[in-house]
Length: 162
Length: 379
Image (cartoon, rainbow over all chains, first blue to last red; front, side, top):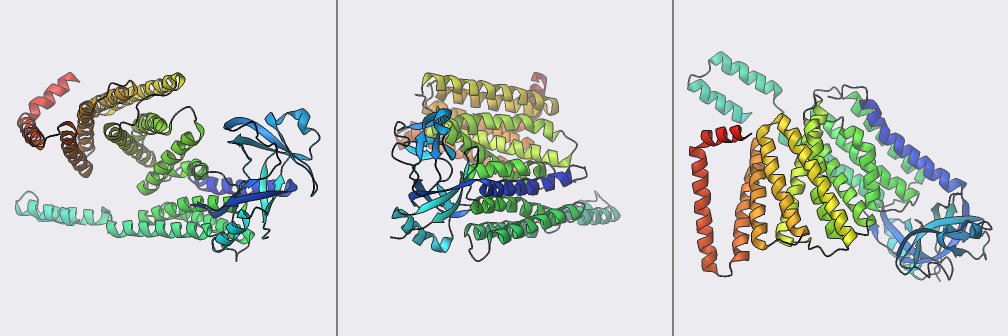
């Protein structure tokens, strides 16, 4: 068994792939611009990564207003730096509307909800219930790191228990 | 080993083999037979349970350890395991190597979970499973361990099916299940199984035979769905129906190629596949084009499972053969309850069917040579 020269590369491939994935995620997190967005949500479980809180991110009033159904067309959120900045929805990621943005977030509308892969945050099992309770109050926020090509990673969950 | 010893003693007492032959066969078998197979199977189970425990530990998102330390520990364990596998790749203790490979295989999934947790990558479980299957495929193609290969096949079938269910919006969920999971996918697995089984490399032979197993399993599960649930009552839009018909055509094409490939290796197997796949395709079309009925479904189910039974018989898998025959018996019972409302009709029907089965079986046993010769001439 396993006499050929491809056996060692086949063993190393998964580790190499996982290291690359880790480095890519770490780089994306480090290199992006940081934005803080308000959220509200609930707590399900993923079989391999555990409890996570999932929430609805508030990007502003007009986000996905015309899309009550699942829309496969890519859309964007124009992001502006600064605590009091107003972000806005850009249908079909029209370049003319994105040129004044500090960064943009790519995603799709799903039944009136903008989804950009930042709607989940993994939390420790023992604190899951209390974090979930706090997030449901609707005052919490997320800190995201956005890359130049519009992809984002959630860096932190900022809990506001009021 | 005990079974072989009993046989050897019988043959020695009957004068078929001498004392020295008895002794040399016994010594050979003792040296080459797998030692305490049950214990090793339990050890493998133990390893799987430990790996699941590690996955749960990661999933609990233990706060006492920093993310960097978690990642460092994870990659150290993976590195250690891959080194051990490479170190013991030529070992005589096959169970040790298989145990290490299974551990490595499952801990790769745990690592994906850990990275996803640390960097909050979100995403669906099937995406992680697809990534896992893709990066572990080379290992599966290099291992002779059946447990690892079976786990890989289950994960692949699950993740690809979930991918279609989540992303294809023009089909209903049950249409995706029946057109992909119970038609195209088993046909694809069947078509790759024959060249792989003919390979000179033991690991590819294992991959091929596992592929054949899951292909037959897929078709048989499909026959249960069609037969009992009748899920595919087509009322989709026209373009979906055309797409579905296209999928059936591709599945038929793969099936045709499979019959040809099996014909090159084993003519009996090819004949059985031809009958089985033909009947299954007819059952599929009966549902897609809306001419199915309970009686037709029951009849086709019995034909398909009879063919599967003979297939298991050819492949020398006695337990699966018995399972297929028992399933046919149960289907007979269900068919009579479905078709006849009166118990008296059901009773007479079952008695008649039982007598018919025994008569056909006795006829086959008495004329086995003639039938085999006749089939041989047909082929």
